[in-house]
Image (tube, rainbow, N blue to C red; front, side):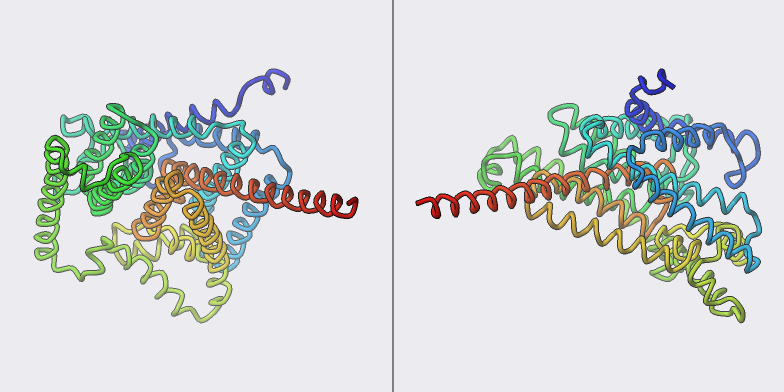
Length: 437
């Protein structure tokens, strides 16, 4: 036990975050070569994920935080018991696997937040670990066209590296992109941004291409406002800057033009509805699950409150469309997997984070805007595309960004409290002097 206490466990957390993508590559390769497929392969990476949860638990410093995690875990197990009572639990292992992923996200969020607040974990070191992770993801995607990775979508030039799916990978790369543009300077920033952005283009999804291009444009405006001391008009008078600016805008416009033309052609050929095309049929997953609940004659109230569970949802969807196994949109998924109570808790927490962001932007927009943008991008990815909250790789990025935002908010709150105490103390002293006179 003494030797365990001497180990700096926060460094192990940073190391895990940095090499986290490797575990997903292990899973993909194991599922592929074992022939077990993506739904059922217990790859070696699961062992590392379990060890990471143990590591997180060892880093919980306060009993209150531990109880919070226990309460969430107990609630999720209660939903499983009620679903079993209603006859929905077709596979206990599948349901527990999803519960484990949610606990993984919550534990990561709690521990990283607390370690940042206690200055045990450095914000810069955390971002550097995320950067190393993003570089590993990018390299895997960038070498895919040379036969060292898997192809992505059939209808477009697309690659997904050594990952099972493109969507959760795009969530990671989109989430880190604003922070890369904020934290790093000079050539290293250019290299990191290019690697990240080109990887997003190669993924070929609507979220990755449109989202990545949008972030680049927004962060260019941010850099012009906060990093350059002269006005945009004065800047554009310089010939060299005009050329660079024109080239960047032309490249971005060209990329978007080519991509959108191919997407429009695919939309015309496929004859999908607009909503199905934009959500890649994810809206149907929610519709099928809602339709099942609406037709229930018994246990409807309990089902609405506590959900259907992962295995039952998989059965409902798979009976309608063979390729459907999950509700991919995270917020809708939480509602149908664990019920309205869990969904409302998630919504309340999300509103709380948005309130924090609003206060931070009013206090110091320059410092907090990149993290706010990162959160908003990952939030939209989670709501519309999914594969963020209960996908271990992407959930670490989301948890880290939320933790940084929470830490910034607590810092300004503490300063505000200290200033209020100081002003009260000052008033008391002034009153004392006045009475003495």
